[in-house]
Amino acid sequence: ESSCRMRFGAHARWLGSFDTDEYLVPMGKFGSMSEVAADLDRRRVRVAVFPSSPAKPRFDLIDDPEKTKQPDGTFIPTVKDDETFLHTYNCNWEQFPRTKTLTHRSKQMYRADYVKLHYVHYATVTVVSQMNEKETKDAGERWTHRYKESHMLEFDEENEATMLHSKSKVATKMRSWKERCTQTVLEESHCNVGFPFPKDYKDGQSKNRSDGWAYNCFLNDKIESYWWPKLVDAIKKREEITASLQ
Image 1 (cartoon, rainbow, N blue to C red):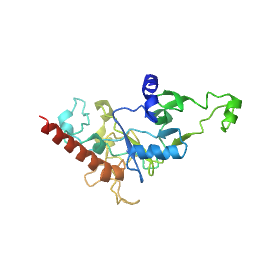
Image 2 (image 1 turned 45 degrees about the vertical axis):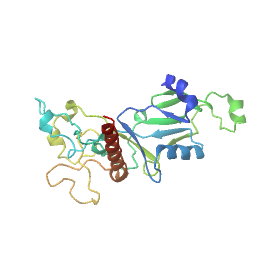
Image 3 (image 1 turned 30 degrees about the horizontal axis):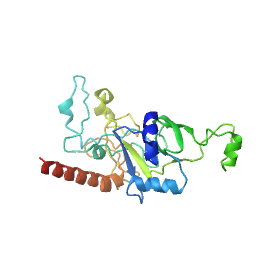
Image 4 (image 1 turned 135 degrees about the vertical axis):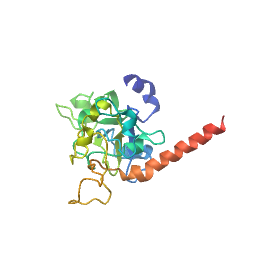
């Protein structure tokens, strides 16, 4: 990560280190992460934080559990060949705004000219944190003996940006899944496949589907109605271009 900042920091306003299963999703009025970054610049934000917790693969969109069934009754939730991870994992166990995400899971995008050293989840050294008391005050920054980053923002996940973490589930996470997934428990790991609440669900209604499975996660409507269709269209266009070159 330090090597990335050293090599490419001079050529980019914003940098970030993300896994391939982490989708950055513009929300609200924003149509791209470039627009989000421009808005952060306008507000003098230098480090932006994405809350994170693993999403659940939706049971109705994954392969038949019998295909990957293990001797102990578990199975490996597998995304179908004709599906996308973005669509299949669009099922967060906590509604926005999420409050139970953990700091050590969050990811950041940061100004390359401001953050001098970044470590996975943390901006450890910044332009301001290197200053002494006089330099800090001369720069118009607030001085404290215990440094606290003043140019950091945690994204408003409904109106700015969010991150969907489509972390794959292994068989060992699926023990007793048939029993657990009929229980109405809203927890990250209680049932590791997703059964999204209906959009028109109201308090007091049954928390179990007609087939017995319990609702345990929530759809991101912008992913479902806007970003996923755009992704499918982009994949189709790429396939057409590839086919035309053969």
